Image (cartoon, rainbow, N blue to C red; front, side, top):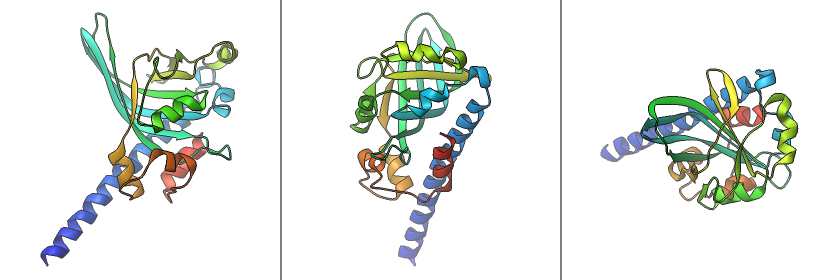
Length: 214
């Protein structure tokens, strides 16, 4: 009886953990869906079509008291060998900003990767924007042509009050959320490279909707 109770509790904990990741995917999909409805303020379609990877972080929290910090968790998808976006890899985002500032704010963050190098850097464990990959505030709407004239490997966007706009993200670190990936895919030693290559799959409807939104 004791063993059965322990197994039941473990199963319940696993289900709750997976539900948290499902909810994160659902909110990330909502961010992308709303993005497409902003017309002149949306991320250029051409940029998304040519992207090697996309990171979506719903409700990244920025808190500042003289020195600012940001933290959030989200999902990464990258192009596989067939040119399709892969199943989601769960990631964490952290960063520090200087200068006189105070207050707190929650925004949605979208990062568009224009090369494989940045995506591979995250898959290897951690990528710091501005160091491991050059980052620029992304163009919106009719500014799409500006994307072709820069050498940025990552374009960054932040949404606040319904408006997406390019944002400076130098110094922001993106790392793998190993625990969330393990919980979502139900595999103890799941590797980001396995997910990105398609070696590990999921039947999650929310994952399918997230990819469809791209």
